[in-house]
Image (tube, rainbow, N blue to C red; front, side, top):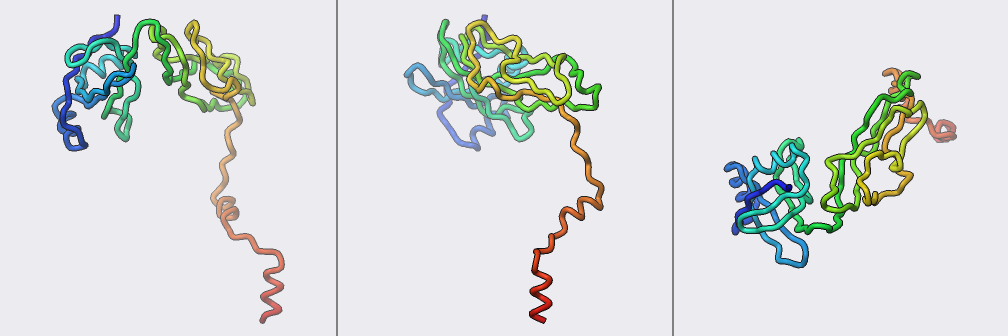
Length: 208
């Protein structure tokens, strides 16, 4: 059962109005999709954050709009701690949608015992799935990840039934490699020094 989200009509737009809205505990939002008119709305910040905490992707709208909607795109502040704006996409039961889902690593890579470090390269992936099967996150088990090894999109272990990953299957999600050697200050200074151009010194001597 989708969580209920009360929405109100928003007639005034602009950054100043959006800031005033947020100061009252509300957030600006837009609702679109299915060929229907785009609506400018406000939603409760508390209701949105509760939905996010529960891993909810689909909400049931009540008030100035009704029906189910996908929490499609969210604009965050600089520190990714507060939502500034929300895009809601109208959806219906049985419909397939495209959405980005976070990727989380599970387990411990054996390669770390050989001196390697785990590098989590791809943190989210776009999938196409039924609206009723949108996962909160996807997982990759790294218990078999050895030194100088990598795991790709094909290593995702809990893709929902019927879902399709919209990325190249050989795209690397995580790898275990030896840490890069840290240069001493003297070595860094030597690398930054301007190299002498071959023949430059000889030419200057001739000119003098």
